[in-house]
Image (cartoon, rainbow, N blue to C red):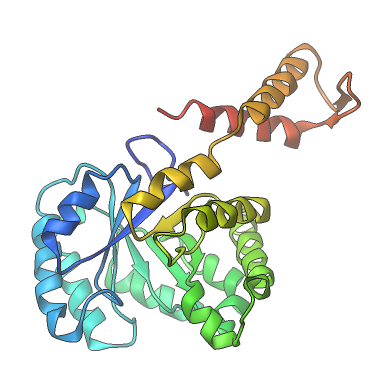
Length: 279
C-alpha cells in the first residue's frame, strides 16, 4: 500500500533525528514525500526521552507532509516508551506510519500491531534471518503496509564487502513485497551525502532490481532520487504508444516494431504515465 502524500506517490523518504526539532522543521519543508523522524540510531541514549517528547509535540498538529517515526528496537524498553507516546489520541490522527527496525520474524509484527492498533507499520529487514523470513513478515498482519532493507546492518551481518553481494537479498525483498501485495520497497539510504553521482548510479541499479524510490539522509539527495525514479521521455513515449495500441484492440498483440504487449504490459504503461503526471 503506497503512502498517501501530497503528490500521491512516495518516492523520497527523508530521515531526520528526532532530538533536533529545528532540523525536523527544515526537513518538513525540504520537498520529501515522507519525513521519517528517527528515534533509534540517530539519537544518543541520553537524548531518547527528549526526542520522544519533541516528536509527540510535532505530531500534536497535522504536519505539512506525512510523517513516519522509526522507533527503537522492538525488544527494548525504549520502544515501549516510544509506542506509549505515539499512540496517544493527539498523535494517532497525524502519524502516518511506524517504521520498525531490525524486524526478524512475523511475531514482532503481530506484537507491535497489538500495542499500536490503527497505525500503519513498515518493517525494516536488517539481518540474514529477516531476509529469510521476508514473505512471512510481509504477510504477518493487515497493519503491515511495507517492508524495506536496512543495508548497513545487513552488510555487517553478512560480512559483505562488494555492493553486488547485496543484490540477492535486495531481489528477495522486492519479490516478497510483490508476492504479499505490498508496494515495491524503497531503497536503503546512500550514506555518502556528497557522492551524488554514486547515488544516481545506485538508484538506477535499484530501479533495475524493482525498487521504487529511496530513503535519504540529506535534502540534497532528494532531487537525485526523484530524477532516477521518474519516467524518462523515452519511457513516457513507449507507454503512450502501448496505451494507444491497447485502445484500438483488446488482448495480446504486437506493435509495429515487433514488441509484444499484453494485459500486464498495458498495466505497466498506465503506472508509468500516472507517475509521469505526478504533480
